[in-house]
Structure formats: C-alpha cells, structure tokens
Length: 143
Image (cartoon, rainbow, N blue to C red):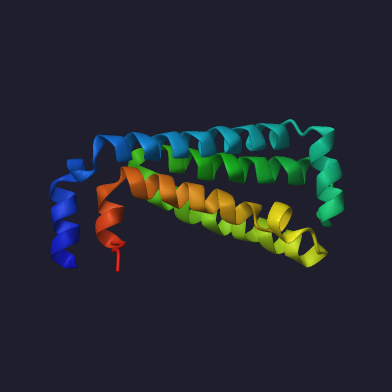
C-alpha cells in the first residue's frame, strides 16, 4: 500500500484524461452549488432565515452569515487542488451537521436528510476521479 501511495505521489498524472475531466465536472457542479448556497447565506436572503427557523436554528443575520462564511471557506479549500482533500474533509463534517439537523426534525429522508450525503458523494467522487493520490490511498477493486 505504501508503495502505491509513493507511486501516486511520484506520478500524479496516472489518472486518465477522461476520469480527470469527469472529476472536475462533478466537482465544478458541486462548487457552483456551494458557492450559490454561501452567497445566499451571506446576503442573507429571506428564504435563508425562513428555512433556518423551520430547522430550529437561530434566525439572526449573523448566524446566516456565519454559516455562509463556513460554507465559503470549505468550498474554496475544496476547489484549490493543493487543499482539496482538507476541503472535502471539512465539507463532510459540515454536510453531516446538515443531515443531523434534518434528521432531528423529521424531514423526508430521500429529499432532505440525505441531500448532504448526495453532496458528499459528489465531493469525494469528483476528487477520487481527478486525484491519483486519493485513488492510491483508497483503492477500489472489483471482486
């Protein structure tokens, strides 16, 4: 395993061109969605504070902006190749908190509660497709 990780570090270009671009397309869609989410929280729009009230969170502009800043920081870290793994880890924690919030109030499982899981799969899936080091660290094998 250690040899595979060292090989991937020595040759980060071992990801196929198709996988690399598929990974960036998935990651790009996620990044665009999260940037949109951060911006509406930074403003904060009425839909944000109304949703926060429904979820049982404080509805202050400060709370909305704090969540927006957290989303923005995690997203920027994810978007930068050198810090993308750190960004993915932080996004996983952030999205896990969102899932716990939806679960706590009994929102529908497939559409609301698991939405954070869907975004997390996009984050890690996109990163996995475009980063040979992650593939070496977590090899997926058929059979």
